[in-house]
Amino acid sequence: MARILIIGATGGVGARLIPLLAADAHEIHGLHRAPAQAKDLQRQGVTPHGGDLMEMSEDDYAALVSGMEVVVFSAGAAGSGADRTTEIDGNGPVKLIRAMEREGVTRLVLVSVFPEAGRDRAPSDGFEHYMACKKRADVAVAASGLDWVIVRPGTLQDADGDGMVRAGRAVPYGDVARGNVARLIAEVVATPALRREAIELTDGDTPVAEAVAALRRDG
Ligand SMILES: NC(=O)c1ccc[n+]([C@@H]2O[C@H](COP(=O)([O-])OP(=O)(O)OC[C@H]3O[C@@H](n4cnc5c(N)ncnc54)[C@H](OP(=O)(O)O)[C@@H]3O)[C@@H](O)[C@H]2O)c1
Image 1 (cartoon, helix red, strand yellow):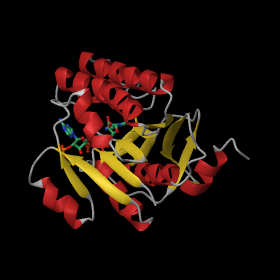
Image 2 (cartoon, rainbow, N blue to C red):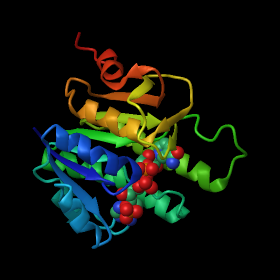
Image 3 (spheres, rainbow, N blue to C red):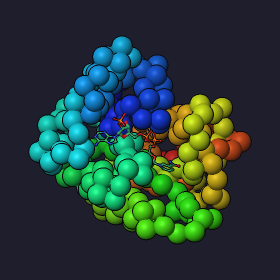
Image 4 (cartoon, rainbow, N blue to C red):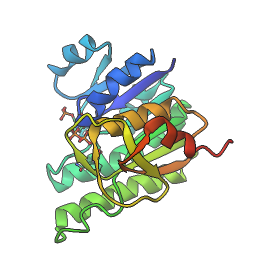
């Protein structure tokens, strides 16, 4: 059992992660920005913490992560504008890392993006900016002293999925159900030996637990 904070708890991936972590008897905390979301999180057994990532300083992040054992960052600006992408997808994880290091919280699971995302479409400034912000966050995480895992999903589908994935340090690009992303994160949380790894992820034909076990370097 661990005390886990989900940043992005009300999102497509985050909301699907909550019942999986609850089933493993974890103590779950979730960041939300709309006051009305607090009751809904509480109903799911999640301790709500109000906060807007557009406004949060490193100190605010430090207060939020204090006492946590694992942090999952699955928030995103979701195409709501360049400034929001810069602050949420780019600066957010950077501030979070510094706050975790300050507070002695060591385990971070960051939801990033598949490197080949959007390569089959005409480039747009907004999407290129999004990819650059995600990469900036990945670089900061990988350079940190944390026990990090970066998850790089393919194109997200609004589906629960069937728990069958293709996950590895390099796999072909494809779609992935948000539910399968949540399952993989839950399995990563349950596997503390897996650390300092970046995992590309699509739907596939390997059970999540098997896919995560195959990535372990500790035998
Ligand atoms: N779309 C894709 O195909 C794709 C592919 C690969 C990776 N990703 C990444 O995967 C991650 C999860 O995606 P998703 O589909 O679960 O995202 P989502 O459904 O758009 O959820 C985003 C989450 O971030 C929260 N959030 C946004 N702005 C916030 C703010 N200012 N303050 C506090 N919370 C804020 C949202 O809260 P609210 O409930 O208040 O909106 C929500 O909980 C994201 O990092 C995304 O960039 C996406």
